[in-house]
Length: 339
Ligand SMILES: O=C(O)CCC(=O)C(=O)O
Ligand SMILES: [Fe+2]
Image (cartoon, rainbow, N blue to C red):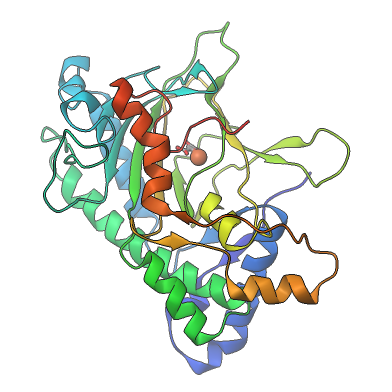
């Protein structure tokens, strides 16, 4: 049974010279995981105490436990159809309603304007004391972690310091997204797919999920003739699940894979997950990296296909802006069909 690799980020949390070889091992492991799976576990216990996301999951539960009318007060339509609360089945993936409810937050913008796609204001629940404060602490930590993992990945790709600085300037003001998702138990006749198969859009997804087993599944297709298999990515204490989004496919001309995943929740409990999407800056021009070109030229076996550059904000608008025009939340952030 294949399981995803576990990679410890601890060596990148300090500048200790003695940790140089551990840093190289972490970077090499990230590189391998991104080529082979596009998914891995990131051990972050040296960075955050596990009680922190556990507390966030409790706050999330307290929100989802509120009467429906209280939750509906934060409806997406109050803002830009991207920020706020989407009730059960409001989100659609692959033409099918997802069996989850969720609360989405985006990087705040200067001069918010709810008549403009993605440019509204976040809607925080006021009934749950501490909700905003604790989640804002988490957002700051995940942004910091994003920069740390990006630097580690740049080393795994053999980038020079100048090249890393150029990449860093594309992600140092991340247009991040955080989703707080609740998955109720499903009726007996439901196929169990609570969130349809999709790839994530952007750069890095950091997922904290409660301990519910057999829920998140990752599609493994090793380029063979057979159809591929779904494997479980059950939570591991001290780790988050990390996957790479489509921007990494562009930066690496497809050397790194953005992998399909889905949620199948057949349990009787109410599952909570909190994905944080660490994305490029809104204005970033994402294009194949010189370090990847070097690698592709040096290695006969690598694909020579070159990806078209995209402006991250335009790419995102082309996905989410569509929901805005339709005035609905179908196929929101992260779950547009890619099949
Ligand atoms: O809830 C999960 O485990 C995954 C959610 C997800 O893949 C997403 O929101 O993009
Ligand atoms: Fe996802």
